[in-house]
Image 1 (cartoon, helix red, strand yellow):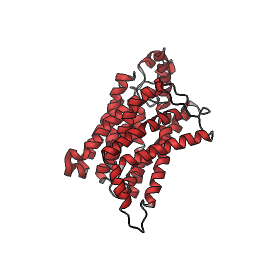
Image 2: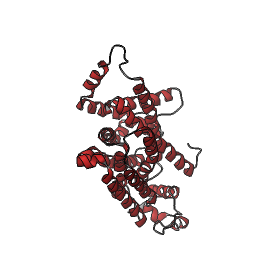
Image 3: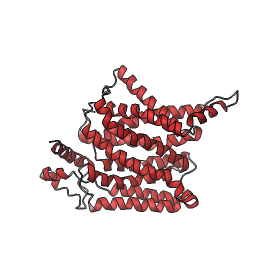
Image 4: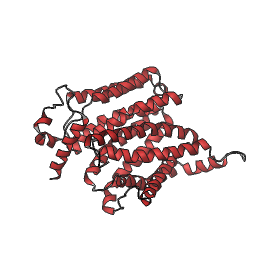
Length: 350
């Protein structure tokens, strides 16, 4: 990755994160269909990721930061958001269709935009940025009017997705904060800290939901001539673990290069892949009108433009200042904003 330019790293990290994020939600949905134990599934994925990372280190494929208490402390709050976010995502998939989870994820940039200004030193979004966020909200509201579960169950069907919305927003904002403040030397460092420290909280959540007892009953419910666990379930667990490790690396890589709100928006836009795959392989996708509103959410993400750091406005070069985010011209792209962010970060550290 060091051989790539900043522009190439941004593109590569976005593509990698988009692929992993867009497919993991679908794989988890399929896995839950065969193994209805969301917390235990996450535990398996976390443990598998830790084994793969340390295995790669033993083979001298990657380098891994050592575990240090001064680095553990700032990660503890992130682990709370991370574990709770993963759990609420899995619970949302249990009671809602994939599109419902995607729409609530589409609303998260609205929350992160405020956190970006309050805690991460960014400017408020430009009129174009607010237009993009408003389009997200309108698309989500339109989707709700087509959602059969919302029509029949009301807000009960959105209870877990709502919790997921606020947890994911806090996770995105705080994740950007610790990327800038915790001096880890390798990309494997954040992956190990989040996965290793996330195992225990997810095991506790599994106990709270009595998943150990349920899994025991499930294991022994098979007939003598049947496998205790369907082969397809084992395949999905392995596949989900591989994708989970991939999303760990790609997410932290991408997060280190762009703002918290932009990172959240990319997580929304890459759901186009999820929608297409979901329509092809799953029979519980939304009505055509709901799908149209979902794409309206994605259009809002495209309209949105990342605001600069507050200090970046004072230190930016004339060539950067010409790219006014409020001019309506699309000269200032994500990569240019990232370069301005780095100048702002240097100024803040001083």
